Amino acid sequence: MASKPELAAKVEYPMTPEGQSDFMQDFMTRIARVPGCQGFYYWEPGWLPVPGSGWAGEEALAYIEEKGPGGNEWANQALFDYDGHALKALETIRDFEPQAGNRPGENGH
Image (cartoon, rainbow, N blue to C red; front, side):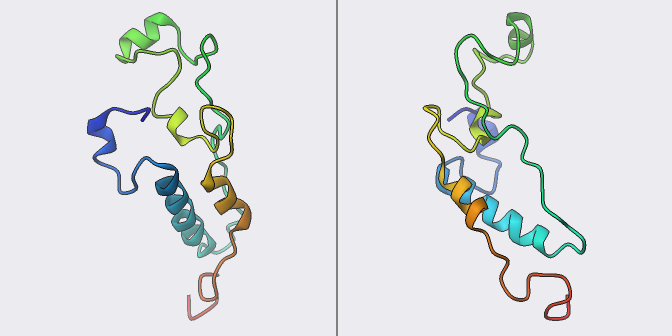
């Protein structure tokens, strides 16, 4: 897990491929209910912690008390595993279809 245990314990969805997929399903269902919503922006879905290409230098890592070299909770939110294979959440996004009653104007919403 690319996060601190005390942070992982505070989130509603487990930091697993299944938890990420469940979160994306719930998130997309909720935004489908927002009038005028056209979609969402997923920040850096391909963030893979590769040695030598981290986001922070040694001083920055020391300041935020990270071990580096680039693995942290942000890498844990990518849509690919650390070997570059697509995670279940990517399929969830691709295959999402709002259910009847989840779109504005349906079922009185």
